[in-house]
Length: 83
Image 1 (cartoon, helix red, strand yellow):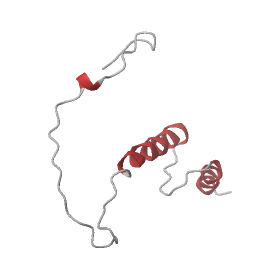
Image 2 (image 1 turned 30 degrees about the vertical axis):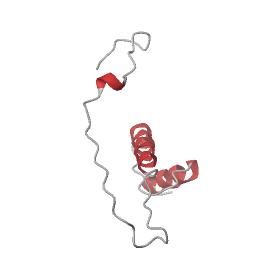
Image 3 (image 1 turned 90 degrees about the vertical axis):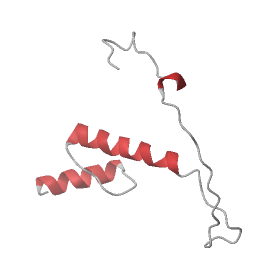
């Protein structure tokens, strides 16, 4: 989806997504006392990849560990420049 300006930018909605068939698979987690499994961790992954790609796009540095702090960006820049 390309737009000439942010003024004409059309926000994607749920109607822009394909239909998804969900399947619930109940398998107990032997490593937890109640047998539960986490499901809230999935939304945490994409923002960090976006931040890493943003840093790479702005500086050319590829950080591969979290947290990606300004100090780590500076250290990576110094290492690249041999300082």
